[in-house]
Image (cartoon, rainbow, N blue to C red; front, side):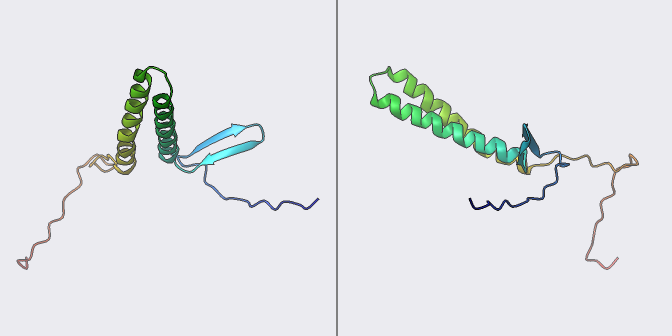
Length: 111
């Protein structure tokens, strides 16, 4: 039987936003927790829309399909919010000494 070549991947598990899921001797490494949250959100959105579509094709009460579409729509709204949280950083304007950083003003008046 031929041998399967496996690639080794280098990763830095020391990053705060990385997630490692351990299962026995195997590990699943996600490079960014926001990517994992976003992908989970996308999968749930698809599942709710599929469920809503199936309900609309069957004799089940319409309220189930409506609720599934509503939840799917909420997840579609959450997606850009996840991106905003991922790309917005809050920081303190004070340096380590506790002094406020001084603004540097450049003027064109030559002085």
